[in-house]
Image 1: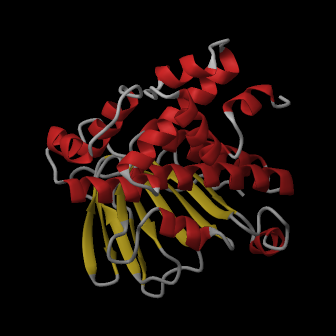
Image 2: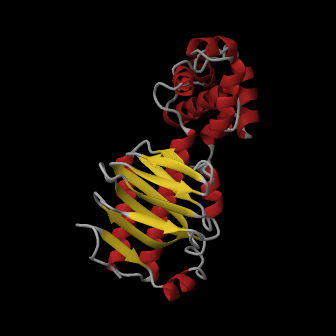
Length: 286
């Protein structure tokens, strides 16, 4: 049910609770469901206080302006290109800055997968904010959610909104994990991607980007799940697969392209990584 009153040009949809209960019994939407969603432009005097929290997790995107939020006992300033995530059942209040009121998009979400998605964003009651790398993409996804639910709250529309919400929450998680262009981790990753044909020494790479080897290794494990050399190997193997799939290069030529002087060593390494030889990979059924 779209509601027109409130802030000028606002958009707001509240899904009827019987429809929410029904959706939470269906296979897809029971995992992630948008129950409320809205857009408040330049929301002057906007304020909300919920001492007992809500039954859903709240995801708020600040597109411009500023605001504040008290989550539990802590106060946070919210600025443009920031997200605020409030876990279900958490006491909170928030509002727009008086001088520069925020423009926000927001959604309430519930479902069996929400806690895992929140954990993936690495947010908590004590750390509820995170940066948004692409505000345009985040806004576009929330616009998709609002547009679908403004039309109706039929099962297909609610499933479409769930899909957009899944993309939004995973984007926020990725934005938290992936580094910015000047970040030491990103500089190290770029260096590795540009040097697939040679070996890498972690201490030298760490010195190049200005941090300790231990810190660099920790950053790689957090972002990729493995160490520096494991990431470099995955890049080299990806290049090998590409060459095997798209060129007529011999196994020896592929090996040399990614820095293996010995094609037999490359073949053994490729087999350990992929469970098959380079020749078998090339000749596999498409």
